[in-house]
Image 1 (tube, rainbow, N blue to C red):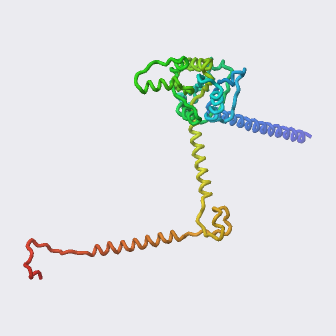
Image 2 (image 1 turned 180 degrees about the vertical axis):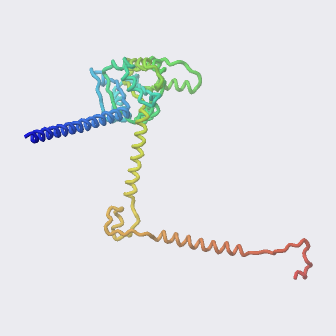
Length: 323
């Protein structure tokens, strides 16, 4: 009886140990999945460049509207600025603020908004936020995208925003500077270049003034994508080009023996096709190379057999006594 009780106790103890091991394994797997989810979300967030839009269509909103779909700057400009350009007056203005990336290569706009350094911007609730905008490399790329979207943008600095809103830019000297000033005064779409070392308070005040100004119908605030996103995009572009080159190589027509109409299917049907290692063009090239090499060798050999006299004298022999 004592032995049976002892065996029963041992079995219960072993079953408890197994249960504990299973629970430990399950908890470890759960932690791994959670950590993987967090890391993937962090990478996704690091590779996302946001854009904030204020225009006539968002004035009726009481809360921000978020869009997490992957979007390009051209799609945003065509969707948000084109509608304003069609319905607004001639004096209305569209401003695009582009913030340079931080000194550590990170996306600068999320750093400022998450740390509360843009309080005025955060209080403007009638905003549409695009959380993932790809292809924003800086003010130059935004200027190019606007030009390709049939806008006529002009680039300016953050210090010129107040003068542009009031229509009173400082006087300049020189024909080129005067032409730039005149072009900036007449522009309806401007790209504001915001340096990475900008004072957050100045940026916040400039954006709020643009949003609340009566002549400004559309405001876009975005930033250059981070260095991590640029590296990821370059790697993806390399992989895409490699895949495209491989597909083109597979689909390219190959040399083969034509039998009836089998030679017009561009290599899609390989049944009854025999690959050859020699074609008439290759054979003609080899024969011509061999003949050319043979003739060249004979010519050089004949030229080498030409010989002149071996002895040279200062006084020539009399005529008739050369022998």
